[in-house]
Image 1 (cartoon, rainbow, N blue to C red):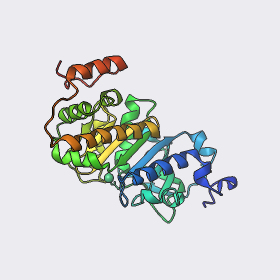
Image 2: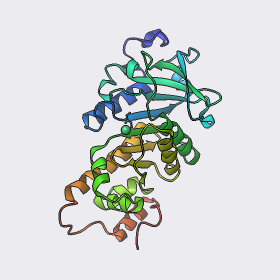
Image 3: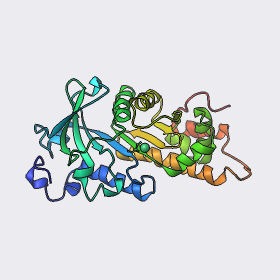
Image 4: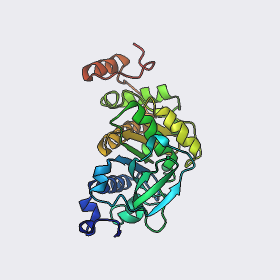
Length: 281
Ligand code: 2HA
Ligand code: ZN
């Protein structure tokens, strides 16, 4: 275990540090779901300084890494992140090798590694998408904290057989099960296919995230965001559930769907405002 951890934590860090346990557990669970084969997926959560300082020596910088995209908006912020190339399957057994606690430096031009990412590991290859999305979401939602990227199976399948038009895809998902419009009235954002791990996919993902908490990368997976792991993961599993139903019924004759008037009634009952331009009432 890390010498930068306070001594009493050394025995079982997953059991004793809530923010490490949360990320280790949700990533392992996503692997069990079959969504995160090999090194697929990545997670980052913004953390409070006091919360980090209770468990980790924040004055001890293990290493620093430059960022190829400055994020001055996040200067001084703490995050827990999954490591680049790391397997979700190993998160619980070897948290220190697979996860890291980092702080964005004062200029927003680099990261200080405070714990984890052992053996010269680096933060997720999608760090650009994560950090730029944290900036975008915090501008519209002060409660925002968590980003989860995963290769959810049915969402990838649906991105092959459904049009990639955002409004059409959102409407189809809403039509699959009653909870959808209530859980994601802001709809889903959809990017064109782009090479992953680039600043470009990061910039375009963050741009979409100004208006929605969910962005689909066709033939690749999904980004979900929220105020907590439960919130971000709950969004993803709801979209994935709807995509799974779509994949079961898309080739069958459709007898009925939830109508736009029914979707409107749902939104009214639950006090949500569906993104405009989708329901035809
Ligand atoms: O971390 O999922 O998008 C591996 C990936 C890249
Ligand atoms: Zn991916």
